[in-house]
Length: 373
Ligand code: TXA
Ligand code: MG
Image (cartoon, rainbow, N blue to C red; front, side, top):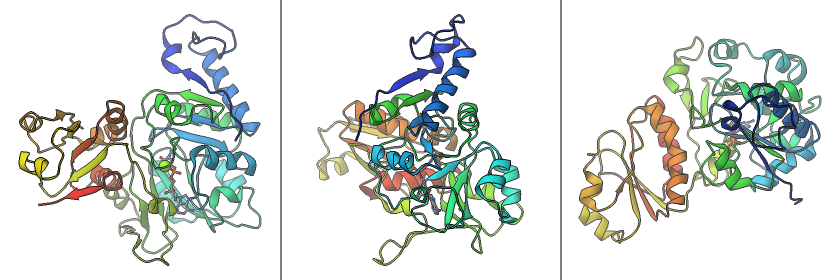
């Protein structure tokens, strides 16, 4: 693959500096408005010429390409080392655009109330696709008869999509199997040299990916839990009976409804051990499992005592107590502990309600071992 030079545009660089008119990439000293607009125009130009741009969203950073350009979309799969049978989410900046250009036919009524409540926001919907007439690259959809789309709640993302004038096919901007990136630095760590530009919008607010819902089946299904909870979705008219799809991956012939869910995911270098249902590590457990003497970090959430790490002789690294805090901190913590040389990460699970469903979904995929009582 061709190597490109990655340029990093930092929002923090632009905040407190005086206005100047130089090209935004000539210097890290940018002005507050013009260069920000200029950097978005530059990023949009990269997209239109078929290059990749990483951009912030409220969930995690996305690796964007023009969804109508197969050569550009191919670069996404190559940059991430992503299997070709795992389709991408399209990102749009307006519903009008979706109606006119992407889906000339009617958007199924069931989505109206959901779109009205959660867009822009961390919700991805599955829509039918007419493979004959669509302009969307078939590579985005891995040949399926549906496609996934969302409108992100992030001003930089919306400005980039609107300026580029095309939908962005964008998976999370990490190397496949690694925790999703929640900062521009994470993207740079994984993908440096494999994309044109990274737009730095600071830390992602939600920290976990969007919820993927399928309203084309009855009852509607959550295919991937994420930033909007099952409870919030069931609160919407027409979505009261929504269920969470559980892929039966034990069967060799089962085709997972959300192909991405079958792959290894969110794995830091360190071994993640997840404790559920009130289970808690003890000194004898550490000893029996050969973990003594290793670089061990303890990520507690709601019930483990602050003194637990000290009593075990390991390092305390709290994830937070509120669901929103744990979500925001999770991927960042996994990456940070890798950087600190962690060999083992012991994590206290949470109940699978509200934000807990998405948190536990990601933790179960990151963990190589789950301990219950
Ligand atoms: O929050 C997010 O959704 C982030 C940001 C960048 O928007 N994106 C993201 O994309 O998480 P990615 O590629 O990492 O995950 C997309 C998920 C995968 O599990 C994929 O299989 C599923 O969406 N998906 C895409 N198209 C689908 C379709 N037509 N039917 C079912 N699942 C689909
Ligand atoms: Mg991903």
